[in-house]
Length: 503
View (spheres, rainbow, N blue to C red):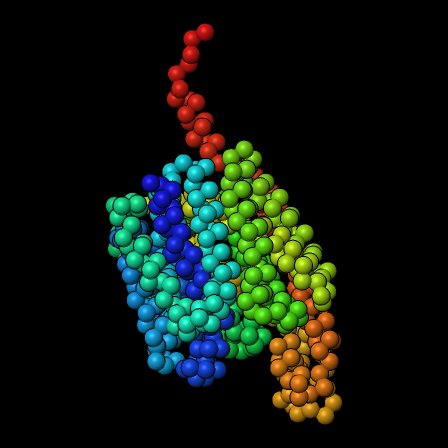
């Protein structure tokens, strides 16, 4: 029943990953039908991730209070309803609203699935393995999103990509009461709505600032929201310290394993998020692969993550988890070195490097998340799960912003506008590789140089990510070396309770 329940929880987890990336190939067809403005297009893409990140902590704590299975079922029904609204949206404005509702509903599903796993698998070894499966399902959903979106658009229409949620919701709602336990903390207290508002004010401006930096570089419209987010975050933390029933128990950060695992997850996701963004561009813009074929090329990295997410918890039953994470992060560094030395025409090297990077992600996603959730008492595992997922969302967004901005800056510094072209065309050539390729038929653009310049930016950004992963490796060895192998404490307790045998 436990493992069947995990299979049921895998369905919404895959669905959430799909919804992150499915619009990559759906967007052109949707834009032709609805005719959104440039700003509306950005909101269609981003509002889903914004609201997931913003509401994770609130929904994780809400699940602790009203019941995690109950929140999962309500969120699944809301997700299916919002998906139907998105599929048949007659205008860009209604599609933005539907995507916003999807984000809020998605924020109920992510911490509910993870916290239910902690209830279903009290054994530390089984729990870590189950969390590895959970992390892999989300990553597989993200990897499959572009391919699934492309197939559905070709066979049906753009709205079909959203209808995948309906059969998933039917299956989850039908099996939840039979396969999933219910859990609600008896002494959770009331939900503090001031804390909810402060958490949104802390997270949403920060996510916006990170995404705006990725698209436009550091500007004043980026600095102001970031400062607002930092100030709101400081007020939020002070309020949580005073409340008897806080929205987020900041005392959890006093646990060294909890804080260090969150830091490792953040650094690892920054590297992988930036690498994913740059590698997908490399495959399409440098290697000139179609989006669907480029998506298939990322299948090998997804399998590497799957192997690490399942294998790392098994190894960590005998070897200290901090050491397992450190070794896999060293393998990730090999991947970033491969990415840092690739040239044009090196698709195999780039994909291999990305697979090594994903290998490290699989291990830290499984073991790091297990440390974060395991450090919290059962009554607060929903809140801890939400904290883990919030950090991972921030890491992905920051990776795209930091490494994407670095690559763009290096590209713009080297590229020169062709002589005799208009200012607008020159800006497109020097602004990005995609811009240069878009005007290459009508302007004397050195396409070979543009692709080489982008690849150089990819090289340098990957090496920077490798240095950051080295810091995460040192952190694992220094701050997590005290964490014993999975199940070691339980085995020791069992041995103490076992009566001594007479000779």
